[in-house]
Image (cartoon, rainbow, N blue to C red; front, side):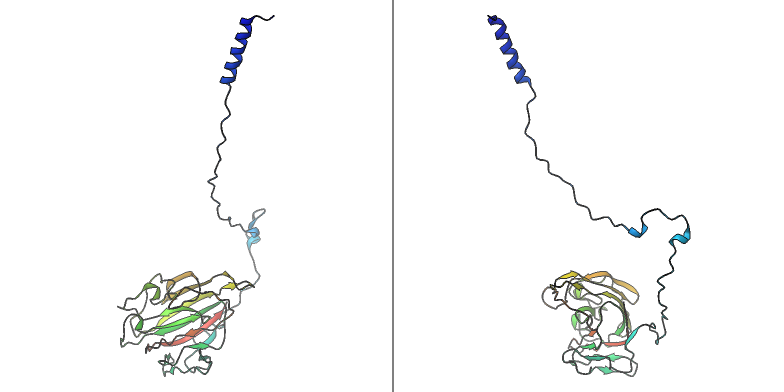
Length: 276
C-alpha cells in the first residue's frame, strides 16, 4: 500500500501546479482604426520599362486643329458668333419663342428692354467656352439687387449673376460673378459703373443616367475682366431665387440673358461661343 504521507504530498503538488498554470484571459475585441484612403491615381501609359531616349516620349498624333484667335472680328476662327451687334436674329423670347425684342443700339450693343422678357439663343449647347461683354448704366439707379441686375444662364438653367456691385453690397452668393444663391466669387473685379465688363466662361455640363439621376455635376470656371473668380466650381443644381437647387435631367440648352424686370438697363455686346 502506498504511503499516506506520499499520497498527500502528491495531491498538494498537483493542486499547486494547477493554480500556478497560466490562466486563459478573455480575448479582447480588436477594433480596427484603419481609414480607407482614396484610390491612388496611376497612369497605365506610363507603366513598364521607363524610356531612355527622348524620342520614345514624343507624340505626333493627333494633331490639334489650328485656330486663328482673332479671325472673326476679334473672336476665334472656330467660334459661333451669337451676337455681333448687327441684329438679334440668333435670339428668341425665352417664354414663347418669338423674336427677341430687346433694344439694338448704334454702338453694336443690345440693352435689356424692361419687362420684354428673357431672351435666349436659338441654338443649344453642351460643354463650351463663352465670351460675353456687359455693362451697367453710368447713371446709378437703385440699390442692392435692384441695381443693374441681369444674368447669364448656362444651358438656360444655371445663372452667373450680372450686377452693379460698385459701392453696393448685397449677399455674397448673389453678388456679381456668383453662381446665383450657390457660390460666391473668389474676388470682385468689376470696372467702374458704365464701363464694359467681360466674362470668359468655361462650362462642362452635368451628366445623368438612364433613370434620370445625376451622376456628374456641372462645373464652371469664370474670369471676370481677366481675374479668376470661379475656379472649376461645382454647380449643385438649378439656381432659384427661393428654395434648394433641383436636378431634373436635361440635355443641351441655350444661353439665356435675363430681364430682371426692374429697369436694369444692362447692355451686352460681342458674344461668342466655342463648343468643347
